[in-house]
Amino acid sequence: MGLKELVRLCKQQDRKAQEELYRTYSEQLFVLCLKYSGNYEQAKDLLQDCFVKIFQKIDQFSGRGSFEGWMTRLVINTAIKKSKKNGFHLSITGEIFEEVEEDLDDQNLSLDFLIKIIQELPEAYRLVFNLYVMEEYSHKEIAKMLGISEGTSKSNLARARYKLRERIKRHNRMNFLKSI
Picture: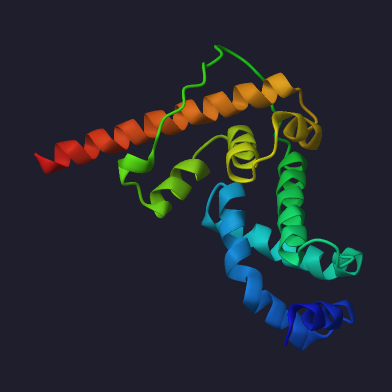
């Protein structure tokens, strides 16, 4: 069954089509949920919430643009709303970190490790990091989405990168010590 037909049947509340849509996209969307969640269990809960919303709002998908892109935006917006509902807020306190670009290609880090350390970031840093680095939103767009200033977005991104670099350095030191 093609995607257009699958979406059409889901709009009609067809359970088999909904199951097929879930089977087709749950793994891809779960990876996205992992990026925006603090742990595996939160990601599972977020995925469940997202599919409920997908099925509730599928009538709003007009067919213009990609369906995957529409679902991705819905997942990101659901993650942001869930974070706001849980009472998190973005603020700047303490020192401002200078952004330093660092090439991680030569680091030989596993995807599981990278997801784990991103999940360990404070929620505000994780949201901004994912939106900017993974989803390629601008600081202006992030500021609008999260209801913050562009400066706060930039600061939280710099702090996230700093924390990730420090965690990677610690990981590399531990691996070096194990090897001697």
